[in-house]
Image (cartoon, rainbow, N blue to C red; front, side, top):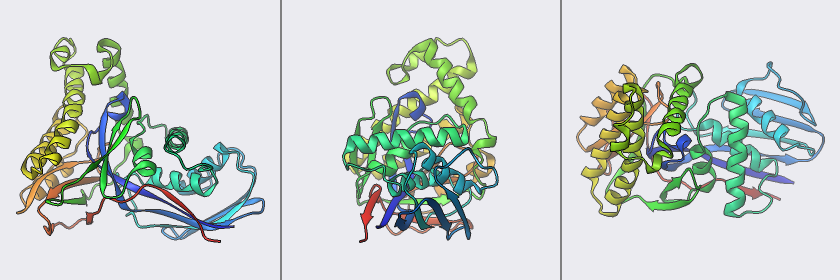
Length: 343
């Protein structure tokens, strides 16, 4: 049987470093992603990446981790091992996402696409898609050791075309949010590859857990509560998370009011908070954020993803172009992951 699976990358409009505390996020699935096309059958897993011009073959069942595999292949064998894949698959992987530490969730897109290709979507319901998101998160955590939340996986598998997706990462409740036609979503790279594995990402997650142990669920915490923390560093970290949760709801209100200037102001304040309170930006990221923010037609901009390099997002008047030396695109809110039987 020939099948095709597709899973999009994502750009998070607002709600950064809140997912692993059970907070609010507002990602948008991109109209770019990862496609796996191939044939089910046999006793081997054989895949070729067009983007990297590399291939691998392994006999099923998949055994222990193999350090000789390229990183992308390691993700796929991890997914096959998690699913106890018994029926072979031979196919090709293509990607319309830029490679190289962009912070657009290419790893989650690859794993979601693989899980669908390997048969995980045995019934297409929202609950099943949420479970696949949980499973992908587990596989990715095992592969990378990064203690992130479920935003990337849910954005990839459960988004609705034309909309951003409000996710409560504590309850996993999701709601589509229409993005007004009065603004374009521009995604651009800082020129600095994102290096989460070598960063202080897990240190931020640990700080958030420490704050929760002192104050309780951060979605319920107020700035007055934050002021009671004795450690100034923990105060800064908590202030970002509390105000970032609030910015998610402010952005939804600004979208509903069709207020591009307010939307831009929320992005700018979110970037300031990430840079000063959560300290996950870099001088290179800050410089290109300021450069783009000064572009005529741009309402506001901020870094996206875990930080320490990668991409940024801006909201701008329709038709606005960016004069940057880095990669950029005018992003359309795309659909969630899909599986197609070709014959």
